Length: 50
Image 1 (cartoon, rainbow, N blue to C red):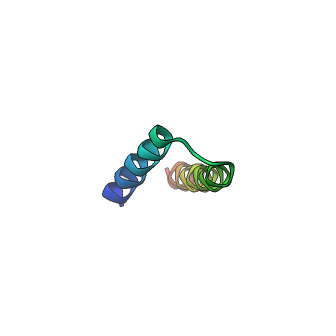
Image 2: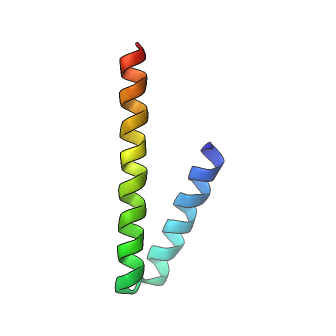
């Protein structure tokens, strides 16, 4: 899981360096939103367990 996230972040960094079209930016925004939402869910679950 950790390696997958690292690879994703690397891919995102390369995308920013190359420049993005409007459509690519929208997809990237949705992806980042989904990642953030998943991270918040994990944090919430871990907090409730403790």
